[in-house]
Length: 194
Image 1 (cartoon, helix red, strand yellow):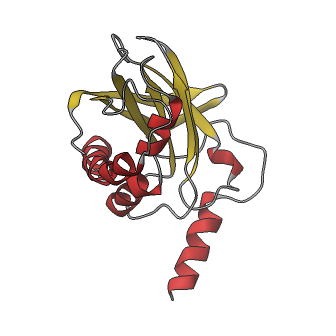
Image 2 (cartoon, rainbow, N blue to C red; image 1 turned 180 degrees about the vertical axis):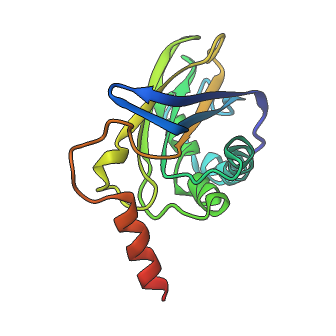
């Protein structure tokens, strides 16, 4: 199945101060957004195997774009989601965002043992979506429960899918609910490799 990319957008947010916390190096959150033609538009209940397989190449392209946007910054949080134009069904975005899609991104990031939070919905052009995010290697790192609100002007058109992958460089700036930390997870991974 051929995937036709129509547009690529990037949304970057660098936060230096939030609430009572100010940092020298900003927390970066970035949303990588691909608007593609929905190859299954106009179908309902069709077999999605070909879409799932085609998503592998999209994952590779997303991984490259994420590395470009994040540079040498460590990615500590991630999440994914999709908007589906009204001639499709939410399951079309789900088919494009499975593990087949995500594993090439994990490879590009050099991390990603945790499942990736995800949300998809039918939408009209410009509609907002909140992409949930969690720690890349352990879903129980509460300080990294976060998200990004994304909106794409003019999309999704009725025959489009908007695929979104969000990443962050760290915890919420005011995180203070305790529990497992990024440093705990990093130490555990290093000990396992030793």
